[in-house]
Image (cartoon, rainbow, N blue to C red; front, side, top):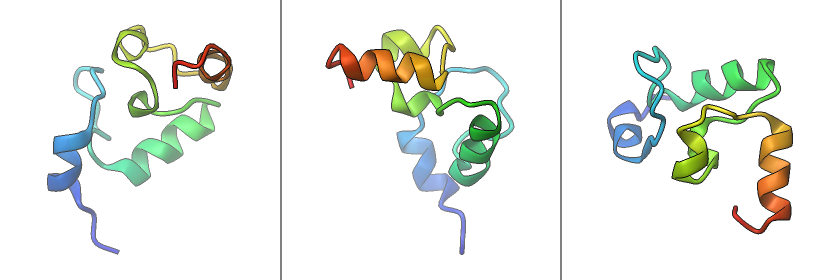
Length: 67
């Protein structure tokens, strides 16, 4: 499968500076899954900027109806 990095660049909302996985979604997902996290694009902008990307943080947001 061909990576659609150019297209992903237009959608990637990650604000982590210098991330080598930026817009390479398959690598990003694997990296975060190994840490029990979700990528920043799963979170609202105000939460994404905190870099708190745990499954638990996402579950709280779901419970609050924010995602």
